[in-house]
Length: 165
Image (tube, rainbow, N blue to C red; front, side):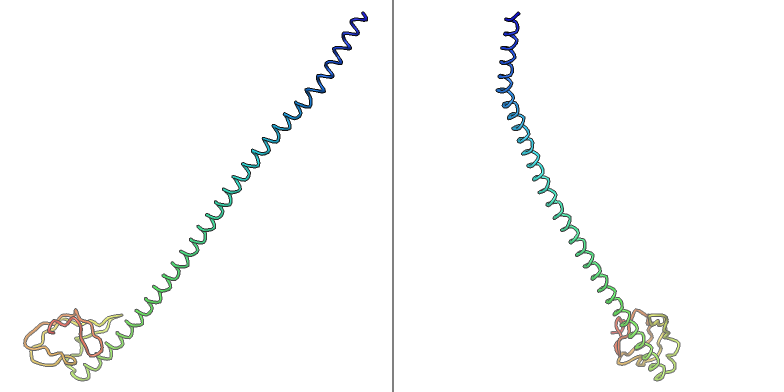
C-alpha cells in the first residue's frame, strides 16, 4: 500500500508539473487567439469607418447638389416669372398704344370707327372691303377693291404682317 501511495503521489506531482508546463502554453495560445481576434475586429472597424466616411461625404455632396439644383430652378423660375411680367407689361403698353392709334385713326377718319375694337390684350380688326383709294393708317395705302383681314400687329405707326406691303 505504501507503493500505491508513492505511485499516487508521483502521479500527482507529475500531473502538477505537467499542468505548470502546459497551462502557460494554453494561456499564451488563448491570449494569442484573443489578440488576433481583436486585431481582426480593429481592421473591420477601420474599414467600416472608412466606408461610413465615404458614404457620408457622398450623401453631403448629393445634398449640396440637390440644394444647388433647387436654387438654380428657383432662379430660372424667378427669371421666367420676371420675363413673363415684362412681356405682360410690354403687351399692356402695346395695347395702350393700339388704343391710342385707334382713337387717332377715328379722329382722322370717322368712317373707320367700328372697324377696330380693343378686346382684352389685343386689337381686333373686322374683315372689311375698301372701295376707294385712301390712306388707312400712317404711310400704308390700300388701293382698289381689296379685302383686308386682321393678321397684323400695330407697333407705333408701323403695321406688321400687312398683306399690301
